[in-house]
Length: 279
Image (cartoon, rainbow, N blue to C red; front, side):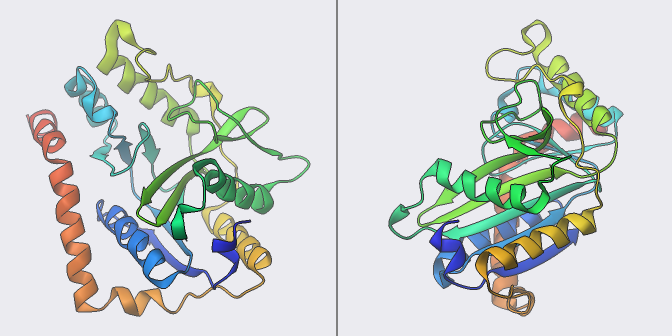
C-alpha cells in the first residue's frame, strides 16, 4: 500500500445516490485538487440512477445517434464523463468508488496506482469461495488490464485520471441487479453504433455472459471497504471534514463552475439527445 495512503488520515465522503448527473464528476475534479492541496487521500462513494456513462472514445462512435435510440428504449440517461475508457452502466445496483491520492513529484506509477485499488478490493472482498482476480476480461464492457473478476466473470472495472500531482482511481462495482441485462444493453448499443464493424476499432464485442455481480448489498460493500481502509492505514477515517467544506459558498461556486464545464463537454451529445429523445 502506497505511503500516500498511509501517511495521513483518509478523508471520506459518501455522496449516495444523486440524480444531479454531473455532480459526481464535478466532485472528482475538485477532490483531485484537494488531495494535492491537503496532501491527504480521499475516498468518495457515489451512485447514479439508470445512466449510461460514455467514455470520450464513445463520443466519437459512428452512428452514435442509432446507439442513443437503444439507450432511449431502455430509458437510460446518457452522458460523457471527463475520463478515459469506454461506456459503463450505472443504476442503484452499481457502486462507484473513487480513491484520490496525492502524488508528490509524480512518484506513483500508473500501474502502481491501479494496484492500490486492486489490493483494496481484494482485501475487502476476497474469500475462498469468492476469489478476486485482476486481469482483462476481453468481452466485458469497458475492458481493461485491471478488471476485477470472480471465477473469470467481471465484477468491476477501474479507470484512472491524473492532474498535476494528484491521482483519481475510479472503480465501478456491479453489486446487485440484472447484470446480464446491463451487458445486453451495452452490446446492443455498440452494435447499433458500429453495425458490421461491431467489436473492432478498439470497441469491445460485449458478451453479457462475461460479467456478474458480487452479490452483496451496497451498504455491505461500503462497510467492508471502510473497514479495510481502517485496517490498512491503522487510522480512523475522517468523515467530518468534507461535508462542511463542501457547504461553503466559495466551494459551491467552484463545483457549479465544474458542472458548467461538464455541460460544455456534453454539448454535442446533448444535441443528439434532444433529437433522439424528444423527437
